[in-house]
Image 1 (cartoon, rainbow, N blue to C red):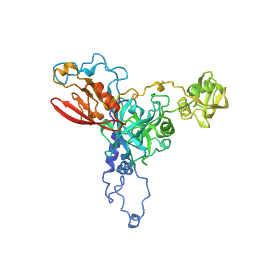
Image 2 (cartoon, one colour):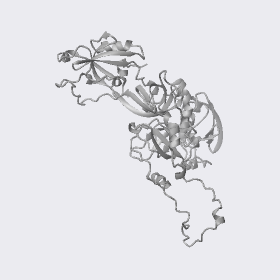
Image 3 (spheres, rainbow, N blue to C red):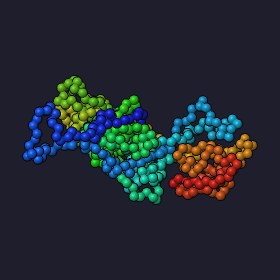
Image 4 (cartoon, one colour):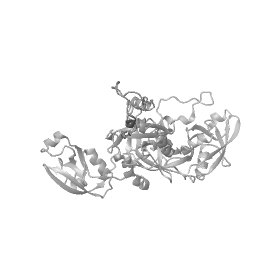
Length: 498
């Protein structure tokens, strides 16, 4: 999660649900406040009672049918990604062979070859072809992604597209067995009202398929994480590991992607609205990134005081233009500082953020009509949107896989045995110095201290030999390794990632 705290279902909810199980008073008991009331006549007792809507406790007496209908489409996402460089002064790990030799693989890693770290998150399947949605921060920097389904199936996955500005990512399951997948659909997040019940499912702290209940606490929250903040707020329990998981309405539709929690807060979580995701999904699937429309305006919120100061405007909500740089689409259309934008294509604009978000969902080249006030007079101008510049430098980020060797993708750290270890009885070969948790290497039974002496039927004299043999291996194939651990020779198999 972007911020970390323990979440819990509110006490009031526990009390409401507990009260739902209390026994009702016997029918013969007198109405409260009328101890001397006479018994009902036989005719009156047969009269039907007026129909009343069920209480929330009665309506939600069990969420098992809802959870059962959607839980199978929620997945665990395990990611290996590049971690920060090792800090100088950090103590070296002990030599696993004893004797105090420095452990050779713990030399400071060159930039771009930092140690790998393991992360956990959640996601959900939206297409039977194996397309999943999750958070960008779950898969950012990923060199290996593995997805686990509730039914026990596991798949490797790759990133199709990411949008860091809304923290949304689309990933694709890989393999010939990607079929018969359970899916869930995206609902209408705009139709949700504050107070509506919501259900969160995810992988908090590695506890897979955890279900929590809450309500929609607020909409259109700006938590200052980016220029397009438009979060749903909920008090459903969301914790580290829930990132990327779905927030459901009572119809089993995803109305948000759980994304962040408030540090130090309890019962305050945030989700990317489903309608934002639906607007981005086609670009992310086809192009891998989002290209946004752009006006080229600096804007701020209109307040009642500013409306009065600007000539007594008849509106108190909108976006005030504070700058329009020369050559931008807005400047070409004649927008000026102190113009107050109140609508775009007839849709009300209540704030500067609303204008930014609305324009950001549109493609460059789209022509829009802006309604604004200038000197107290209402005007309209047509503007052709430009392409938003890469202000955050996102396009310059390197693909972490681009410089990775096969052994790094497998989760292996390697070193030559060297004369100092040969003197202690180790054979020439590739010394395994590190195995990343959860990696293919770990699942193959490889551990630090093993020496690979043969791979694919060819001798291995050092780390370079093994790297070359793994590089030449066909993606998806299985390489037979002959390794030595202490005084024993054993066999291991290693599947090359596709």
